[in-house]
Structure formats: C-alpha cells, structure tokens
Amino acid sequence: MASITLGGNPVHTSGELPAVGTQLADFALVQNDLSVASLSTFAGKKLVLNIFPSVDTGTCATSVRTFNASASGLENTVVLCISRDLPFAQKRFCGAEGLENVVNLSDFQEGAFGKANGLEIVDGPLKGLHSRAIIVVDANGKIVHTEQVAEIANEPNYEAALAAL
Image 1 (tube, rainbow, N blue to C red):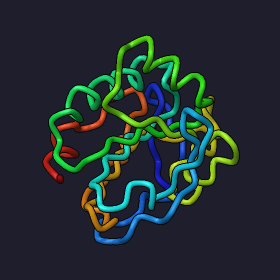
Image 2: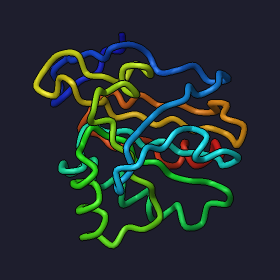
Image 3: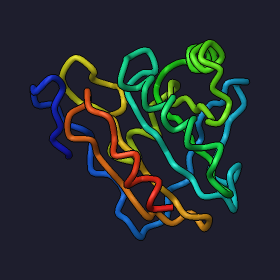
C-alpha cells in the first residue's frame, strides 16, 4: 500500500506500482468507441501510461495536454491516458481541447486495472479512483520507469517519463 496525499492529507492506494524490469500485466480497458483495448492492441509499441483520478480536474487535464503535446514527436510510442472516467467524458474533453495524440482508456467498469497495478485509492474523498501515476513500458512490454506522484494535486515528472523511452 502506497501512502500519498490529497491536499496534504494522507490517503492510501491498494498496493504498490509494478516493479521496473517486470512485464506489464495484460489489461482490458474501454476505448472511446466502447471497444476494449488490451496490451496486445499496442504490441510492438513503447507506451507511456498517464494514469490519473479524473480528466475533469485541473492537474489531470494538464497532464493529458502536456503528454499530447509531446506525443506527436515520439517515435513508435503511444501515450495512454487512463482513468475511471466514462469514455464519453474522455472523448468530450479531448474533442473540446483538440487533443489527438493520446489514446484515452477507461477503467470505469470494475476498476480492475487500478486494482491489479496498486493504483486504486482506498480511502479519502477520491476513494475508488486511481492515484496519479506514470508507467513507461518498452516495445516488449517491460516496465522501464514508474512514478507514484506523492501529492495527487501535483503533476508527474514528464521529463523523467519521456527520458525513460
């Protein structure tokens, strides 16, 4: 269980992020068109998983915008923006913002991705949502970088995530 904060107040996650050097576990996440994406959907691609509580908060929205700006210049890399938001909300946000370089994926149905990767917030006002975290995966599915953001309201270290590619 990771101990993080929300506005300086302690909250906890369901576990720890997967270890660097391990394989990212397969997943089933819902895309904007309601189809299901899995790890094999992105086979052979490097992945930046931008994980956050909700696209309808300022810091989460900023992370999607920031990674969208970087994503167009990344070779053989896909940025996945993952939250428990409904796919409709994710699509609305990116459409309104003109963001086309990231892939939105929703864990709204059961939160299985968050639980499997130690990301589910288990107490506090955001209980049930995902913590803010980054997982970077190489083209073979091996995790090469992780960051559990200590204060949910803070942005992740974009430079460190992109440098891991």
